[in-house]
Amino acid sequence: MTRRSAAGASALAATLLLALTGCGGSGSAAATKTSDVLLEGDQLAAISSQVEKMGIVEWHGQLLTKNPDNGGKRIFDLDGRYSPATGYSQLSMDSVIDGKAEQVDYLVVSGRTYFNSDAWGPGAATCWADVTDKPDYSWALPTDLDPTWPVTDARAIRLSGDGVAVGIPAKQVITGMPRGLFPTVPAGLDGVEADAVITPHGHLVEVAVDVLNMWNDVPEAERAAIDTRKAGWWAMTMKESQDGSNITPPARVFDPQVTPPSQCKRG
Image 1 (spheres, rainbow, N blue to C red):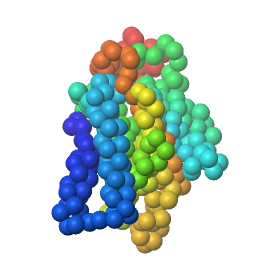
Image 2: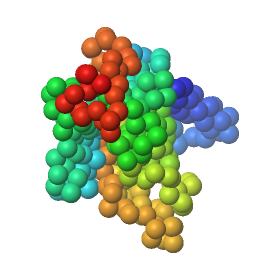
Image 3: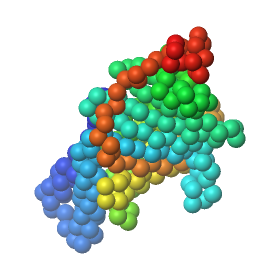
Image 4: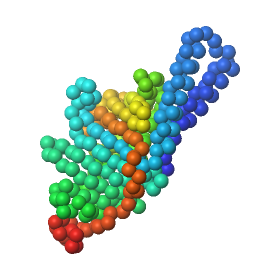
């Protein structure tokens, strides 16, 4: 999968500065505003550069009902490793949807999706089922497997502490979260952005996306058809994985409809 880049934000800001200077812009207010734009663009470009240099990206995503500072409750967690060089992904989901705890693992390799459930027991830990054409099993996978979308698709708005407040296209937010929430991109999202804050913490990049208020910008007629309770806040971190192992195809693939998981190694 081709990785996108947001480094152009800084170049655009520089172009704006030249244009303003050429038009004779003067005064402390104009200079301050231009400096803010440059700083915002530079901060986002620096974070984008940090992400672009990552080999295997190790990431953690968490979906909540709303901002955790306002009492938002966890819906589920995703932990993943993503290889920009191959587009391969390795993910685990820890879910408490409907009050039922569940943990499943995924591998996405060469366009195929593989699934393993903790319900199969420890004896089946290395056994995988091919669920490429079974959306009921792969609903937790994002449509866009590249987890760097909050950075690479962002538009810098203003500085926010050590980070930068950005706007992210609503369509990218939808495809960056688990596909089972919204199998298709809801209507009415053209031109809509989600507010987010991206903050670097040394080798770690932290992201908080306000999905809840994003829905307010969707036209009322289209919003009525969207179950907005499914996604209120998306929080994630990403860093370069210190585990240098490659993401590889599963060693053992079986059909759980034919062979019991407990016997998969004999299947």
